[in-house]
Length: 254
Image (cartoon, rainbow, N blue to C red; front, side, top):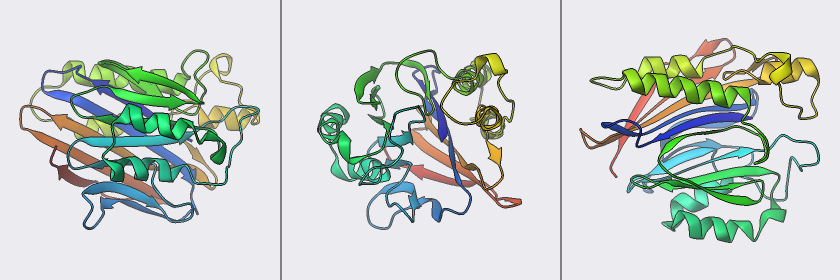
């Protein structure tokens, strides 16, 4: 599972802000976000399925993918969803054109939502086989389909990001951003989605940061375009068994 909130042109200085949690089995091998040698790509690596769940590239391209948790939606496919992000970052393609190509090969993958964009523009989304476009504003997604109301964890993270930007002055408040991504508040039972898992599991998965035995939030990532300074900044905090790593920071040219 995963959750992400995105703010496009909602602050005069921080014109693009992404807050993202990656949820996965704790024993699934992966490398944390890093600069891929010789490629200009900044991303983590899934060492089992290949590809990545979230990444960016010098020049302003960025993308993320989540799976879909819903009855009747296949969980796995012949190919890894992670390659969809990598291919976009390597291609230099227009986001809408790339998603049109991906749409023609959906049967190769388990259910997913893929978001691709470039700084200075909106974002193009392929969610459960349907394309959307995100204009300036606040947006969020997790593991639901395009139908129905946003999941409680999406609303909570999106609202928190809105409050953070409304109060942001001076340098970006990185620690407050990580506090949003560390929120373990569970949704009331009446607001829980029904995705085919047991009630106790549904409750645990309803928080922004997920913590279950053997499964949960593996890393929290923030991306910020500081238009005043001309910087595209990234920070990530990783979680493992009984430990939290120190934050790592990067700057990309755009």
